[in-house]
Amino acid sequence: MEISESTWAFIAKHRREDVRDVALHAKHDGDVDVPFALEQIAGWQRASLKLPDWASHDGLIFPPQVPMEQCSSQFTAQYKARLAQRLLDGEAVDDADDSPASLVDLTGGFGVDFSYMSRVFDHAIYVEQQSILCGIARHNFPILGLGHAEVINDDSTAVLDTLGRVSMIFLDPARRDDHGSRTYAIADCTPDVLTLKDMLLAKAPTVMVKLSPMLDWHKTITDFAGAVHEVHIVSTGNECKELLLVLGRGRCASPLVVCVNDGQVLSYKAGDNSDNHTTISDSALVACNTCNTEDLPAEESANGFDSSHWKYLYEPNVSIMKAGCFDVLEQRFAVHHISPNSHLFVAAEPIADFPGRSFAIESIATMNKKELKQLLAGLTHANIAVRNFPLTVAQLRKKLKLKDGGSTYLFATTDAQGRHLVLRTKKRKSGSL
Image (tube, rainbow, N blue to C red; front, side, top):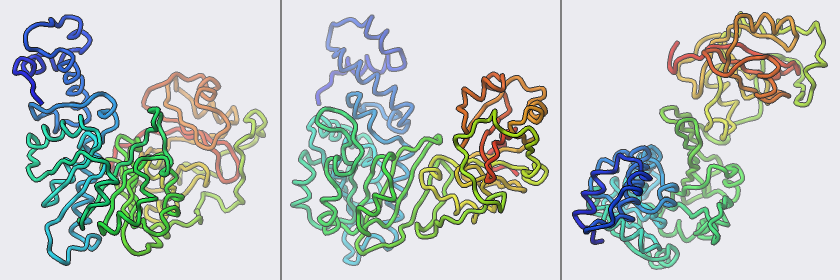
């Protein structure tokens, strides 16, 4: 790619400015390729938030908007690199012949995942069928210090047919159809990893696949018929970003499941997750999602849910919610379900490393008017969340006549006895006791 010095200077001068203002006042003269420069300024600004390491390198070329939106963040790419290193160091990758460790990324894209993962291998091959992205990769990889990277502009399945033995294969199947619409089912993605599974594992003992976080990972494990050895649910900022599968040779009945949300990590064997929950009551569980709070008996009390004993409330992070491993939480952290459908937990003691948010319980009330009045005393603002509760946040806020915000958090839920409860809490700092 030939880019004039004037264009690079223009990009450097204006890259921190509003792209619309730059476009409005740019003079189309000299050697400056203004459309290209504007695209690069916008790309650098997106990268400065999503890929700060990349943004710190001068001279990189950024692709059009869609590849930038679809590419991994620095956090998720670095996570895959650490995972690849562990797999390479462990038994998952068979290097008995002492050949150089090699990676093939069959769906290179913008090359973010490849740029981090390839660093733990002796040789790495980037495969991409779009020639423009291959051109960008050939330009960027040397700047990023990836002198050992080979770029192949070809279809992934064609390359796979002729590929020799490698240590690891990585795929991020395209999740858009021919019309540009999003698709999530594995069979609808390109390439179809389910169809190619046997061929992939014939070429490499370990295959890492990045899939949509929208997928039902339990069904996905079943679809792969024992080939899934690990499942990684990766989130950042409590937003689920990726579902990573590690495929291996030999049938695996109980894959390792790893739930990640920034620095919070919880792992367990899939077979360890049972349906036996410990709730705060031994009474029969009552499903009461459609009850009308106006119909609750006036004498109902929250005394059975004693805030003098249950002093802390815990809300699992989004990766835990996606995994559904609530019994694992109970066993590991000695917490108790308010009810199996609430996905909220309580404990008598503070827990420093709980994978989610933690709150100190100040008081608890039912929807009884007298109890609510006491609970809301002196309160004008609150952050409200509902879990397994018949009212929406907006409906409950209107009913309680509270404005949004402040330092108080109200959680409305239903306990194991079918009672509707409101817990008044204060957020605790992560890791505090």
